[in-house]
Length: 470
Image 1 (cartoon, rainbow, N blue to C red):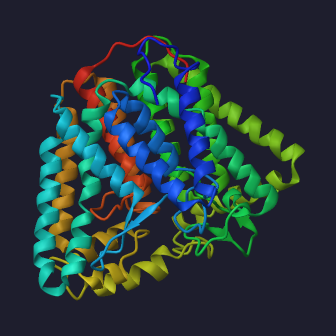
Image 2 (image 1 turned 135 degrees about the horizontal axis):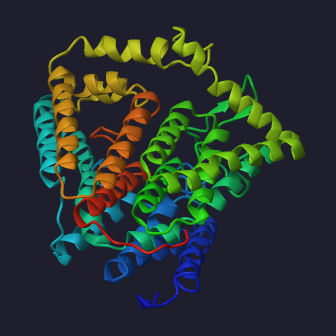
């Protein structure tokens, strides 16, 4: 792919390159020609490494790692991203792992000096990871030791992403924004057909996380949720920093809220609504009025869709009923009307195992991975690192807040950073564990690293921006 001048019009050139490349990647993946797929995706790694447009390739990886409709899903017999088998029992290497390693090598090779507000915090995280790995070694085989070491590689993204982005966050956000149209289209396709888009072209070995509520016939896909969180955080930062605000921002946030609402996933609904409401409250009054239009538009859009589509009408009513079960939870029903299993089913199992090793937990032993459950963050962290590790996490969280408050950033950027952090914490304790050293190699680690890099940029460099449509 040729290099593109920084002066070219992004809509006319980089949009076409990005989404054309995404479509080509999907066609090659679903072609079923293994050698072609291997060659194409390895070529992508090479071109990315050689390219000077790092933000473009970071955007591309966001799309393929967070594709809706189970596109590129690793369980597909045809259509998944390539994996590379290794000898010695180390199983296969995922394509996302190769991307992470490539980005790290490129960042080190680039050697650019860029202020890292959270650098020492990241170092402490790696030290804690190493400590728990060492104390787990007596109960691990050599193969499992190497597998566990691989869990540390996604943590390198918090270093490499900032180095590679530099100050190109606006261009990055512009590029990834139209992808939300595909996300919502895939949701509507599921509601209309009852199956995921990718399954029309490929069979699947197993499906993890479809979240189909069989009893109520409610489709609950978590399509591209990491992308939605990233886009919401990015739009909030840019709203706070631009001189003029256009309604495009409100439109983007409207679509994000509509997508996550239709999924009926309560933790993510709470997290995104918190990010939206809290950021709007702290923005200047004229900005708040403009952004508030998105909530009015959301209500009107849902009302219209309910009136014209029986399928969407059923999905919307069912989603609302499920979200309103939070009232039962607030009233003391830990099952939220029989729709929640975290507190009465999952957590007791994890805590029972934690109680056998309360101080330092089970580390990275086979027992931890056997009983681990990412949907009960408190209990899972205690199982992993024990009381000592949990206290360390609280200390690091306080340290992070201290770094934000004492940075040179503008007050609004400090506030927005803490709001975004609060939203991730809310989701962490209600739906999915983000603050964990076993976050994995997929979209979660990648997008969280980008959000952290974006926060670092706005806190350190206080950019002056003109209005831009996204």
